[in-house]
Length: 134
Image (tube, rainbow, N blue to C red; front, side):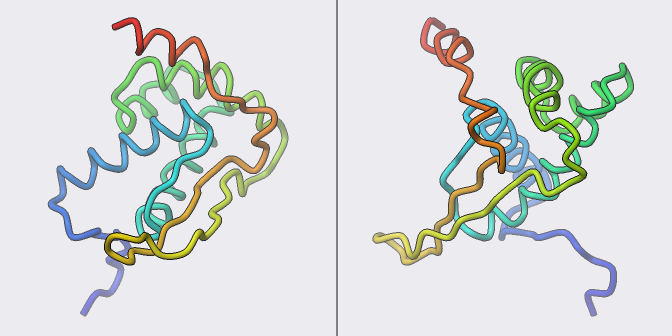
């Protein structure tokens, strides 16, 4: 029985799943909207929502907790300096999942996962320029 086993496995090992969720969350913070499979989007949503809640507190402990999940200093900085202030007083529900239909190659259900206040959270052009320069 699967009582109290809430983690979505995504057919991956534990370390691979953590890395996947971390990378998807960093992409979400950097770009504002990503296209992924519906199962991954549903697995990422609670993680990103909890990170935004941490970002609203903005203290050292919250930054360290966010770094445990994200593992990228640039993403943590953008989360606390750009994303959390733009969210404002919204009490929750920061993420929207929009279904797109099946992928052509393997018929996997695809979806966009994006911020509800997308106009306030435009993608970080400086972050994209830095990545292109490296």
